[in-house]
Length: 485
Image (cartoon, rainbow, N blue to C red; front, side, top):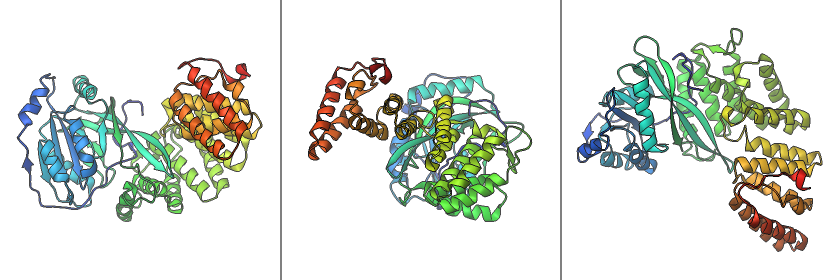
């Protein structure tokens, strides 16, 4: 999202913490260094202090780094534990200002609201144990500026960058979530993937410009610690109680998709999308109100990929064409266009695939949820298509553009070397622009060992030439393959 005000009923965000269990409330205060901590923030601002509030369970592996970073951002840290059996409480007590135990009642909104009651700050940053604030000193000032520029009826959106891992391929997903707010003006609602609602009046949203790195989904699909595996049973239970809740159904479908349960994902996401009303405006609506662009795009894209993984390419194509013809906001995003390219690629429809990837690049990084869909990933796939069409120079150009966007993108590194060697185009590449030679040089050395082991002397010679030319390249040399050829 872009920081524009939107209704509080609109669905916001695509990820949230899942923690559980219960324990008798027992508030603990760590007063050993609170006074010293307060002195760090001697730069007062107009509207009171800021508290960070977390609910946690068994987060000893990641909690310390999160809390230590928060010490530079907020005036007070409140940690509410819902039944940890590891060293979470010990770590929290050594760093946080307020540590308490609260009973777990299968309701995240209830847990967060109980934790809010322990905070003293007028403004609250709601954050999870597996999230770390980037550039904490600058983040502190961003929050102060937000407080001084907005009323208590405005919540602040935070950009959450979630690392993901899918069968060895690492990427990241960006979402914008309401995480900063005036404590006396709102409460959380929703047993899972809870959202802010105003206690009275209308709640608008503005951008804080704060960025948070989230590690909770950085697991392979079969990893038992994958957060989605904890989400699924609770979401299924909630849907038994609220079968018309499209947001819960979206989250269930998305959770199933991330752990490779593609049949279940397809069923839930199809039901969710079919339940929306697309007739009124650019923004479809459901029982909970307007659907956030981010949620809509993610649902369509995940369903398309699920159908591909179920070997139902025609259904994936029909889904994408259906929503493209509706022309709603969810289709004007790089992720949507990238999956159009992928489906065309899998069908062998080169023109359809190229159109999708090129449209994704035109939208660019400003319009991507998943990292790379509007940049390096689409450029890489255009390179593959160019090779299929017998245009190696064009392919090399696309691969190099991918590496300009992300220098360590291994698929593009790997394919670029092979394309140069297979087509004996080392001379054409001598004048290429390599933004960061380090990953490129590392890949060349790896490939050289491979070809040397295979006894391929001619390929080794090409690699040696590329290594020599790479050593002489400036960081930005300009030019392109076609010119060099």
